Image (cartoon, rainbow, N blue to C red; front, side):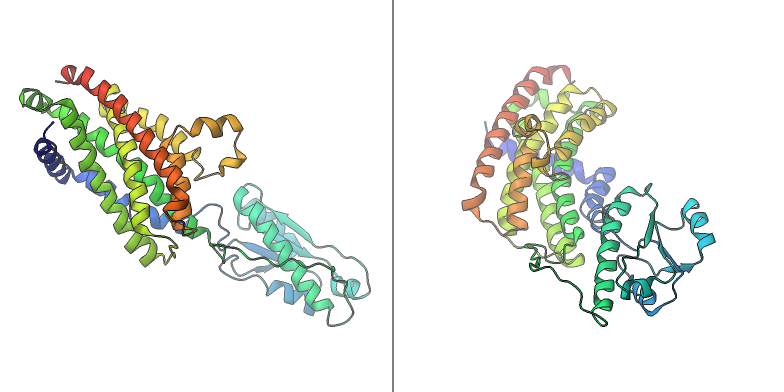
Length: 373
């Protein structure tokens, strides 16, 4: 092995990538617009939900309730009559329709227990579930505050004080932005290395490599470091200018330590990309294989759904995937400010998994490079 061969072959990969406009657009999009869209348009986020109110009471309390719904969680409530409620829900104009009955305030002050009807368009599942809880909390708070002005209201002897750590305002945009960066590191690592190898096969440049005094190890290593550096630089730029700058997401830990974790993740996933490229015979086949591999990696690694909520067999199986350890380390560093003394087990696991994947990919690459020409 000669380090010079690895260096110059890597430079060749960077020059080839610089001429591929499609890949350059993908890199820029993945670490700019994709992050911004994921942070600002998360499906589970209650944002300007449409709500209509049927106020049959016309009392100070009902007006107080109506004025409690305001952006960014809810759009300005539409005041409608009872006849319009069903038609608006059928037409999909409203997600929530609140019906305040006649004499609601009088019944409340007389000690009765009046009820308010909430109609929900359950086809908008994420907003329906989240919004119902918000509306219930708003109603209870407003009714309790109003009733305390006229009579004693029973308060529970134990109160709950919520202190949310690492994300005090419970902004899902913070989580969405960071997770998009994590997912795109894996995506681009596999795509760039796999596409680089398939591109050489399609352009016939594999024949040139075969007659050069270079080994399969040198060829593969050059692709790993070149594509890894591109993704690592793009990741650092995205964290600094998009996540911290544009989206104003506070990062608690060391970005440098996170980039070390990302480098270990890139070592594993670029090897995975080369392995997939040796299995696929064309870019369409590579794309199909990418879907089969990438979706389980992202969905079962703990980034989308907590690992604890998955079946135990899936949890144990996904310990063999680099994404699982990368997500754990990235969350600990970026959200909780963890240091190396906390995340070293994940670093070690990433290094071991990366070495195994690199060895498997190298064996496959050596056995198939002669048939790629």
